[in-house]
Amino acid sequence: MIQNRVKKRIAAFCFAVSVLLGSAGGVVNAENTTKDVTISTTVSNLPSDYTFTIPAKTTISDFGETELSGGLKVSGTLAVGEHVEISVSSEHSFKLVSASDATKSIAYKVKGSSDDSAAVPVFSFSSSDLGQEKKVKVAVEQDEWNRVPAGTYSDVLVFQPKIVKE
Image 1 (cartoon, rainbow, N blue to C red):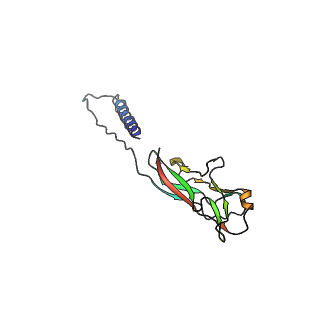
Image 2: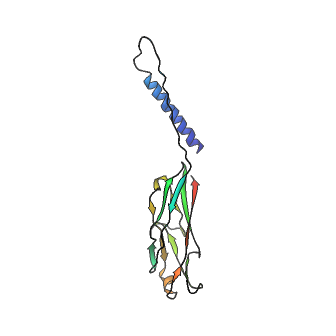
Image 3: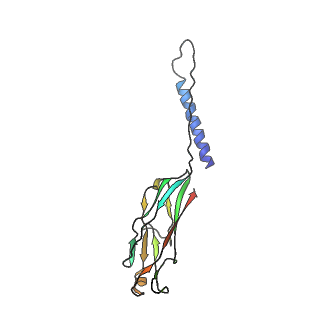
């Protein structure tokens, strides 16, 4: 990060020198007057300031993949060299637990993009991802679905964001 600041300042200085040298080659009058030129640059390094949106309550009606209502979205600004990572955890260790009998449960997986092979994905948002929604899916295997009695099963997903320096 310090190297990037130094590179930006060197680039700004080189630009300033080239502008000064380029303007020095004009016509010189007999009085040989000089003009002062001030060039300045600002390198912004604002702190990150963001909000994130999580999926809404979703009903899973059958085995297979269910896309949660709404996805994850990060809005705001990120400081240079930072991105947001959102991890996912579950109140019942990724099991939908029966409302009438806590010993009955249905295991499931949380998925991000279709090519995501992680057991529990971490959703990453860089500056170019701000404002874009990333889909979140819940996948229930047919065997899990078929082995439990009918009833109401639920779990709570917890989405935890953090700033990561690159």
